[in-house]
Length: 218
Image 1 (cartoon, rainbow, N blue to C red):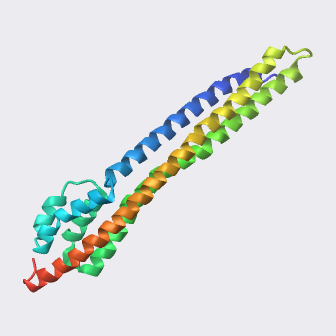
Image 2 (cartoon, helix red, strand yellow):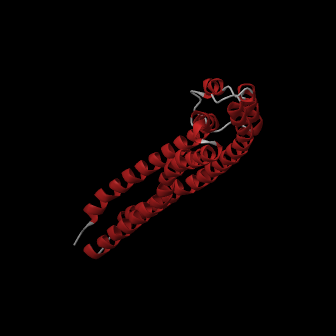
């Protein structure tokens, strides 16, 4: 049975699938990279300077003033500060646990979800390339079985397809491995920055809650 025609059609399908996988992987990497950039401060000094701006209203237990300063800021630290201050009536311990859980669920889990798509591309691209290799070799063997004398150029076409798809799958996966490593470093740095910032904020927040209670609550 000559299946060379089917393998030729399938070859184009494999190329299209590999192209789509490459585009999706690149898109996910760019999205996660910018997402991390949107959620973190550039460095620890920038975050410390931002938190120092909140000292004024916190020292006075001016919680509406704190909310006014952090409202609308899409970075993780200001959002967590807003969450803590807006729910201050729950008490220090419960607010701190809520903020920690929200950071892990809404920030870290969201980034992990987006990054999982990149991991899927890293796994899928070589597998699709291997499928192309199998199809290409099937086409080559089908030509050998169907004809007594096979022109070398016909066999070379199928073998070339088999090798190109494997190489393409690896060419897609390998750069993404390095990209995910770089993204994970950025995520870990952001996590460390936020942890340090929350420690600094909660020390002042606890004192502000005590001051507010002594003044009759706000």
